[in-house]
Structure formats: structure tokens, C-alpha cells
Amino acid sequence: MPGHPAHKLKPASEAGFTAGRDPDGSTWGRRFPLGLRATLSESVESVTALNLNFEIVLYGLFVLGGFGFLWIYYDRRDRTLYEAERKKITFHCIRCNQLYTEKAGTDTASCPQCGHTNVRLKF
Image 1 (cartoon, rainbow, N blue to C red):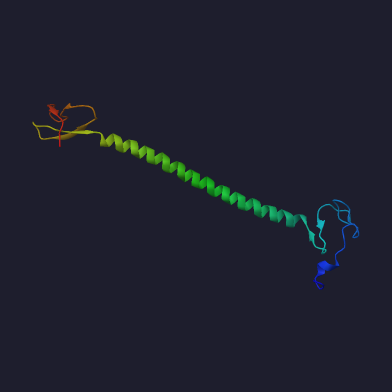
Image 2: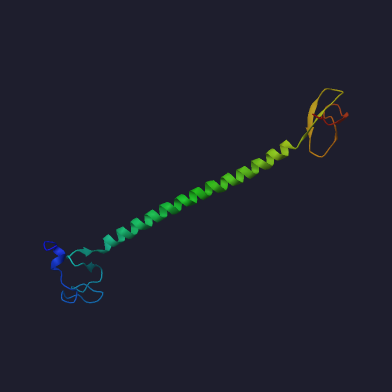
């Protein structure tokens, strides 16, 4: 396009550029073909924005990981408590009419109220 400003650009060697330095000798910015200059603050802002996005994503992943760990921990803890409760055996005392439970694996148990030995209930 003839009216576009990029048509009037000169090669870097004709414009007086040296490798790695601006024409005024500074190394903090870099002169672009259209005369724009990227300053240190602009480059820091772009890097900071990138780092900030990365840090937000990293923080989110840590929070999700923490919730996942707590979920697994409490799920396993509740499952073991439930299994221990589920495996209890129910007994009925024929002397005092008391219902009570004992740990799994016993077929007879003493009544906690009167001490009579009873057999387990079978449904």
C-alpha cells in the first residue's frame, strides 16, 4: 500500500542502528521501525501480566488440589467408620428384652444390663 507508513521505512543499517543498541547508545529500550520505543516499564508490564496470570492459575490449581485431598481424606475416613458400624452384630436378650450390638465375629455375647449370654439375632 503506497499510503502506509511502513512503505517509508529504511533498512536498519541505513537508519544508523548498531547491533543491540539504540542510536542514542542506550540499551534500555529498542527502537522500532516506526519510531516507537518499547520502554522498560512497558516490557515489565507485559511480563508482570503474564506472571500474574500464571500465578492465578497456579493458585487455583493448589486450591483445587487441596479440596481434592480433603475430599479423599474424609471420604476414606467416613467409609472406614461406616464399615465398622455396619459390621456390628445385633443381639436380643431373652431375659430382660434388651437390644444391644457387639463387634463382628462373635456368635454369643453377654447382655450389658443383666449379664445373660445370648445368641445373635438372625433375620
